[in-house]
Length: 201
Image 1 (cartoon, rainbow, N blue to C red):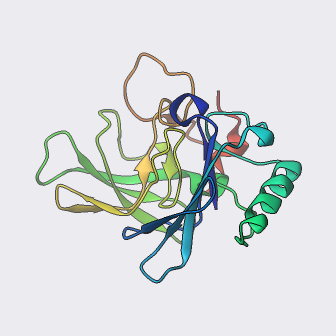
Image 2: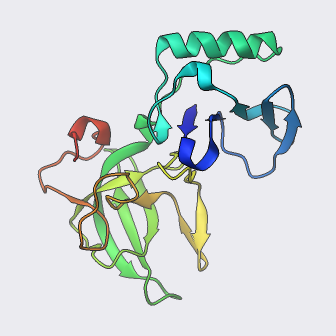
């Protein structure tokens, strides 16, 4: 479950993503929009007028236990019962670029194979000019919500499947350097480490 808040863009609105689905329908209920999949299962919520939660931050946020309690009561009052435990941090990990090849149908894109843990390697299409084999990088896995509100999904870029995103500092909401491209980590950074545990600045 992911919580997204950006007062500048959306005002006092909290977006909750439970699952990522392509086909959805919307149902309005007292300052709450329910987002459901084709089977009627709840996959997300847009909750308006959340001033009483006193939310802070911009992008993907964590809720305190007190905020969850207030929100839970409001949802239950409207007949909505969900478990509010959720964490976006698990979707951002250190990866190692094992290979990097030119995209067959796009000059500025590259097709990479990226190891994200001991058992899993993902194919990710990347447009960054500085991506190379051997780098340790930040990977946003499918299901990650970026600070901009973008939800990372499996996709095809010019016909080639991509399962995640290699991230720049700007995309992670970190102070941006002049150099364009993805954030390259120290060579000794361990694959699979949660990015939150790196204390990036």
